[in-house]
Length: 134
Image 1 (tube, rainbow, N blue to C red):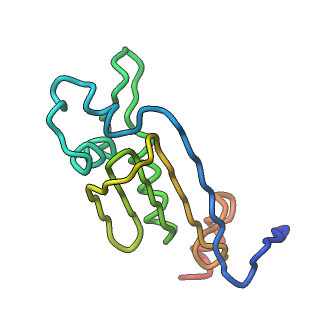
Image 2: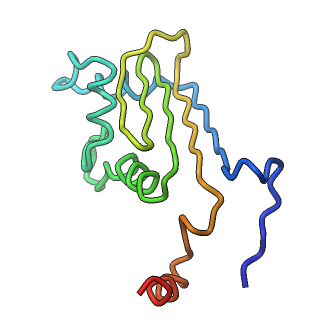
């Protein structure tokens, strides 16, 4: 049995999650690696979204987070917007990477997810979904 979530704007059909980090920002972090020092902001953000890329140089396997987030957003028909230093990413129906001049130092991430049962299901309901479709 599903419980309904009471949203302040239920007719909009989206849940927005916003995270702000006042650190050095994704492009600056990517450029801290010698092989990436000449990347523009949009190139640095593209690099950060590639599976397996990480600015952490240790023996722990990393570099899946932004790629998985992108995959999740695309599969669930959501939207991901990132402003980080002088870079901008928008992932939705299309994927856009741009250089944008802002005065914001750090990273702002906004995730918009559709609140519509026709776009997602719980893992335990996946077998029921297949039965309904076929």
